[in-house]
Image 1 (cartoon, rainbow, N blue to C red):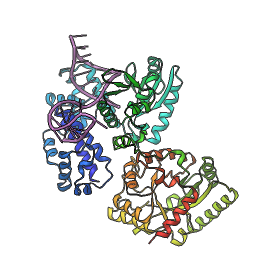
Image 2: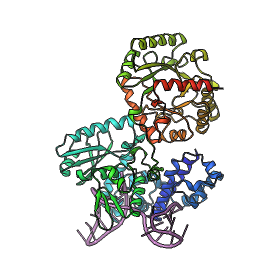
Image 3: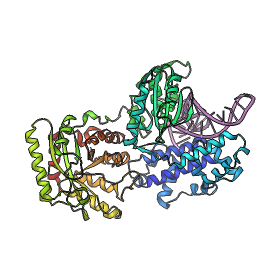
Image 4: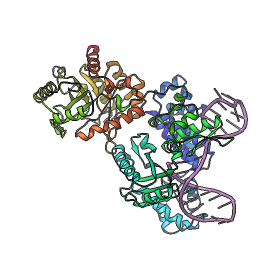
Amino acid sequence: MKQHEIATLFTQMADLLEFRGDNPFRIRAYRRAAQNLEGVTEDLERLNQEDRLTEIPGIGRDLANKIREYLQRGAIKAIEQVKRTVPSGIFELLEIPGVGPKTTKLLSERLRIASVNQLEAAAKAHKLCALPGFQEKKEQNILKGIAIVRKGQARMHLGIALPLARQIVGLLREIPSVKRVEPAGSLRRMRETIGDLDILVAATTPSAVMKAFTAGPFCARILAAGGTKSSIITPEGVQVDLRVVAPDCFGSALQYFTGSKEHNVRLREMAIRRGLKINEYGVFRTRTGKRLGGREEAEVYGALGLPWIPPEIREDAGELDAARAKRLPRLVEPEDIRGDFHIHTNRSDGSNTLEDVAEAGRRRGYQYLVICDHSKSLKVAGGMSEAELGRQMAQLRDWNARHPGRFQLLMGAEVDILARGRMDYADRTLSRLDFAIGSIHSGFTQDEGTLTARLVGAMRNPYVALIAHPTGRLMGQREPYAVNLERVFQAAKDTRTALEINAYPKRLDLNDHAARQAKDHGVWLAVSTDTHSLDQLDNMAIGLGVARRAWVEPTQLLNCLTREQLLAWIRRKRAHAP
DNA sequence: GCCGTTTTCGGCCCGACTGTTTTCAGTCG
C-alpha cells in the first residue's frame, strides 16, 4: 500500500517544515495531502498511469510530481534534503503534550536538546528556566508531559471507549442544570481507536458543571480547567475533554466538537465563500453578525445549503462534495440489519448453547443467525469433526422445527482455509451447509503470494460464501498478515464471495479504508460479530460503524437481505462457480 | 502548496486555556 508510505513521508515533511518555521499554509497542505492519500481507494499506480493524481483532493501539480517520484524511485529527494537539515529527535519531542514546534526549535537551538531523555535531564537540572519565556511552572509541565508520553497513552479500541464514555455521560446527566450530554470527537465518528474522549454538555450554569466534573469520581488529575472547557485524566489514565455550552448552541458546538478537524476546516472555508462564519456558537453572517442558527447540528449544514452529514463520514474524504451534489450515500442503519453471521456456540469455543444463542437472536428481532463453529483442524478452539457437525445440524433443524416463524437459524461453519486454498471439510460436507465461512488461522507468516493464493483458492470454492477477518489483524497484538487486498477484492467480485467486516473490537477486519475499497470494487460485504458470548451480539453497532465509515449502503451489505434473499444469494454463488 | 459561485493571485477556520506577559505567544483540538 504505497499511499500509506507516501502519506507518512508527507506528514514527516509537515513536521519538519513546522520545526523550521515555514509557511503555515504550506505545512497544512502537506498534512491535508497526507490525510487524503490515506483515504484513496483506487490503485495509486493506476491513477499515476492515467495522469489522474491531481484528482485526489489536496494534491496539486507539485505533490503529484512528488508522488510520481516516490512510485518510480522509492524516495522523494526534496523531503530527504529537508530531513538532513533537521535533528532527527524532533519527531519524538513533538509527541510531548504542550511541546510544539516553537518550543522544540528553542530547545534544539539554545540547549542542543534532540531527544526526550535529554529534555528530561535538562528539565530536572532546571536548565530550561534560562530560556526566554520559561519559568518553574513550564518546566514542571514538560516533565508531566514526558510522564504522559512514557505511560504510552495507547489509543483505546471502541470496545473500551464506548462503555467508558457511556459511564461518564451517565454521571454527567445527573448533574443539576445539565440539559443535554453527547459524546463527540472520534468516538462519535466511530473511528477504530480513540485517543481521548470528547464530551459535550448543554447546561444553563456551566461553572457548576465544570466544578462537578473536575471533582467527580472519574477525575484523577486535572490538566486544564476553564469556564467552559476542561481536560482531566481518569484513574484508568484516559484523557477526557469536556466542553459546556448554552443549550442554544448545542448543535453548532456538537458539529465543531465532533470534527474531524479537516472536515471542519473545509466546512468553514465553504462558509467564508458564502459570506458566513461558523464557530462553536452558531452560524453568522460575516457582515452583519446576524446569527442564522446553531441549536441543532442540521442548522449548521443547512445554512450552507447542505444536508446533514452523518458523523462517521466527516473525514474530508469527499463527503462535502457529495453533500453539495446531493449525492450523499444512504448509509446502513441498525434497522436495516436482518441477521448476523459467524456465531459460535459451546460446541467449539463459544460459551453459550445453541438454544440460548437462538433465543437472543430472536429477541433482537433478526430473521436469522448463522451458527458457525470451528472446523476440525482448529483443535485449540474445539473444532468439530464431521460427525459433530452432523449432530449440530440435527439439533439446529430440530430447533427450527420447534420454533416456526419469522426467525430461523441457518447452519454454517467457520472452516479453516488450509494450504493452497483447500478447505478443512470436503465439498460433500460443505454442500450440506446453508452458509460456509472460510478463514485463515494458520501460517500467518507466509509470504504475500502464498497467503493471497490461499484466500483466492477458498473463494473459488462454490460453497464458501464469506471470507472472515480477511487480514487477520488483532489490534495491539498482531499485525495484519501479508495479503494483496487488490487481488482479493478482484477475486471476491469474480467469484461472488462476500468479505467480512468482523465487528470484534480488536479486529475490525476489514477496516474502514479497506471496506470502502472493497465496496468500490463492487464486492458484497457482511458485518458479523464473531460472537463467542451473548453480550458480543451488541458489537454489531461497532461493525456497523465501520461499514458506515466505509460509505456502505444497504444494497451492498449481506445483513440487509431477508432470509429468502440471502438463500437465493447463496444459490447464485454456487451456480456461478467455475 | 492548494485552489476558484470574489478563479491563475491572494487568500487560506476559529476559539479556549495556560503561562508569562502588562497585551500576547504557544499549543491544542
